[in-house]
Length: 96
Image (cartoon, rainbow, N blue to C red; front, side, top):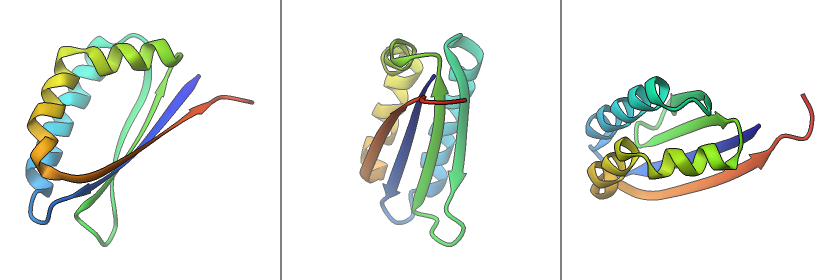
């Protein structure tokens, strides 16, 4: 398994538009990506401008396919102006 976490810091006031674009991307990812096992969207409990993703894929190739998928490209285009920073960390499974 291959896990990915993403911490988005949003520009103030962009939370609703960002979450709308992200939910659309997640919906397509869940419906069309066989190598995707989990796609969780989490909102910070006290900071609406912080959004956290936890994604699990079969392997790094499945994640690469996700990044290249048309719905993900659309998400990046729609959300680019809404995000002030993004931190992506990838993890390889060592034990289950």
